[in-house]
Length: 326
Ligand code: DGJ
Image (tube, rainbow, N blue to C red; front, side, top):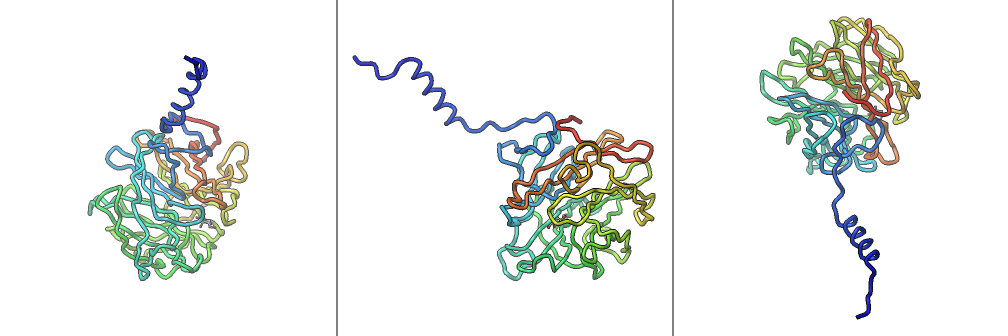
C-alpha cells in the first residue's frame, strides 16, 4: 500500500494540531512585571483601569474601569490571595438600561474605589461619573452599595459633593474608621477632601480645600502618623511628573515633597498615572504603588504599573523594576 505520510510528517501534524486545539494556558505569575500584558486566571487580559484594591476576609479585591476601545463599560472586580494571580469576578457594577438613569449605557465611570463599612456590613463603591453625552462637564461623584465584595453593586446616586465639581478621586479609611473622599475640583485646579457620613454613603459638610496646584489622580496612604498623597499633573491621558504631598493631618497643611519616582522615565511616572497605593497586609513599610499606563487609542489595552513604594526617614520613594516580588 502506498504511504501518504512519513512518520516525521505525522509527528509534525500531531504537534501542530495539539498546539492549535489546546486552550491557551492561563498564566500563574509569581512576580510583578510592570507594563506587560497581565492576564487573569482564565487567560483573559485584566480589564480594571483607574482602579483600587480592597483587602477583606483574607482576599484582595481589585476594582477598576472595564473599558472597550474607548467605551466605559462599568466596573470590573477581580479577586486574589497573592496579588499576582487574579480571578475575574465579573462586572461588579454594570451601566443601566434605563435612559433616565445617571449610569445609563454611554455614561463614563472612572476611578472606582471600594471600602468596607464595619458598622453596616456593606461594601461601598465611589467613582467619578460623567453623564452620557456631556463629555467631562457633569463632574460628579457617584455611590453604589453591595452586600458582597464582588457585587453586584446597586447604584444609589450621583452628585457634586457639597456643590463642588468632582472628577479624579479616591477614598481613604483612617485608623479610627472615618472615611474620606479626596477629589479634584474646580476644573481640577483644586484638590479637596470631604469626610463621609458614618455609613460612608454621603459627604458631610466637613469639606476642605487641600491645595490648588492643578493635580489629579490622587493616591493616599498613612505611615507612622504621616499621610502621603501622590498625584499627577493634568495632561489628559498623557503621562507627566508625579509629586507627593505629606501631612500629619488629613486636613493639612500638605507639604509638597517633589517627585518620589526613581529610575528611567521617572520624570513621566514611567509613562503612567497614579491610581492607588496599597499597604501590603502583614508587612510594615511595604506599599504597592499602582499606576495606569494609558493607551488612549485602545483604552482596554492600557497597562498596569505596580511598583514597590517605601518610606525612609519620612521620604517616599517609588522605584522602577522590570520585575519584582513582594
Ligand atoms: C486624566 C484622568 O486622570 C483620567 O482618569 C481620565 O479622566 C483622563 N484624564 C481623561 O482624559
